[in-house]
Image 1 (tube, rainbow, N blue to C red):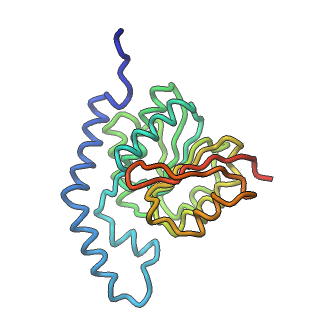
Image 2 (image 1 turned 30 degrees about the vertical axis):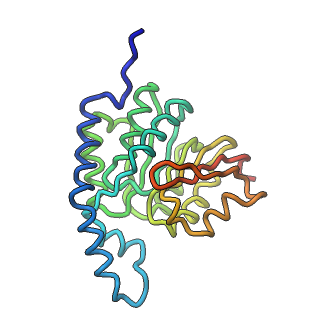
Image 3 (image 1 turned 180 degrees about the vertical axis):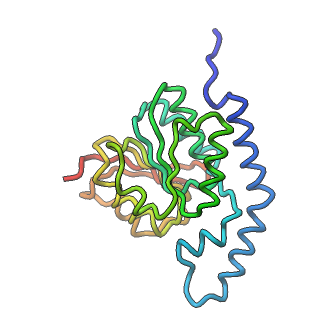
Length: 225
């Protein structure tokens, strides 16, 4: 039996993902060390905008396990619309867009606060041959994701952790029963977010999965009333 190649077997996709991973491996530790050192003497923790500036050169890609899981979900769900909070250099966007191309259609709308990172993500998608399946919106996700072209089938939350819950609440009116939410970096998630998706009556069924450093995986049980 001959196996059919997937979008992840595309040489252009692999080359861009490898480049982002190498950038993260070689540059992210130093960038993050400088960012933490800079913010250490500030009287208040950095805002999302300040953190975006401090980490502007950090690729911060999704872990390959999480990226592959995202690819699998998109292939299985065949979503019309995927939404992403925290695009960074576009690694997770590429995983999703590659699956959308394999499916023959669909779109991912990503959001990135830092304009330079948004531009790099767009360039990476172009080089991977996936730009027609993705739109990257630049700015505050609470504003950029407030108006969407249709119901949301799948959400990836992978940005500023304190904004996971505010962004999810912005998206909730667009979620349908059966929508899935992948929330990355489980150890860093604020308790108010995990409480929201784990509390009976809030409309979710949620559990932890040991992918990367951990994700919260949530199923929307009901349409927004």
